[in-house]
Image (cartoon, rainbow, N blue to C red; front, side, top):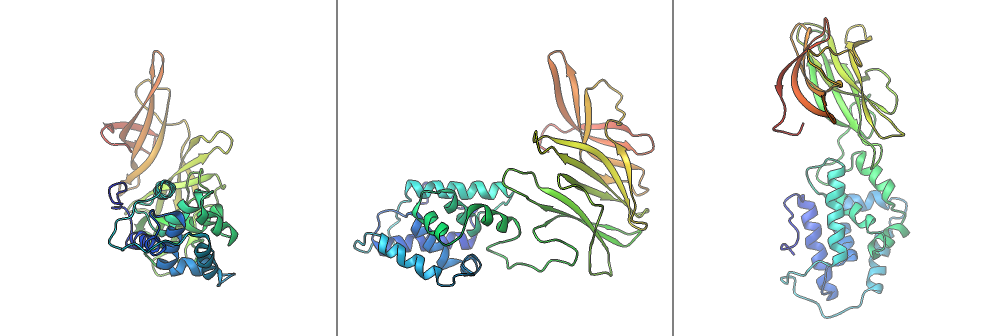
Length: 334
């Protein structure tokens, strides 16, 4: 089995699921690990998944096992020491599981991704059983994107943080004694993550959202400084029709007065060299006095047959929107 698939990314629970799938296959005398064996391994390993997925029908797990037992041709049991191969169908399921982990930007493959892999192989027997039990791919994806994990129990969210968001960045502003967090949530498999900012005083319990952006607008990569009660952030808009992602500009939020003010408007960056367009891809830091930003800047330069985009580490003087390109960012994909 290990010859064909590398399991370094798999969590301990996911690896045990594979082990239990091999055990189930050996008990049926199957020459291959099939999708139904993987489902049985998943149900055996992840009791929390079973409880959540079949909350409306607690007997569903027993029913699934009985259906698999009736559906399977029983042969002589195989020793568990035999390294049973994975069927072609099951190989696709494991590949789908890795793809689902990548789509969610998870560095690991857990039991939740194995579940999605099973559901994506729509014609396999395990997927049919899950569909009959009311477990569907879209709802499972939404549930997992909302915080289901196999290694860590669901941690309680702080008051003011909506369900389904995960923390991307944590900042502290000494001038106002405010904590600022950037939270991301995925709305669907083909949609970019939505970023929101929340803030609270260090002695308060509940967060308050910064601004009220439209559902296709993200507030992201915030930075703050030591001397002023401000946080500056990027505004990115996703075009629902074309799928393009566009830079809307920079905004400043006063942590004391709760006011949002435009900081750098779109198409107002001043660059001392010819170019087609420029934008700020991500903010990196803000000077202590809040006057100079450091950022990852995209610049599209003119070529005879069109344009080419370069990325730079740049400083931005907020008083006049002048950019100084400090260093090209060409060795790493940012």
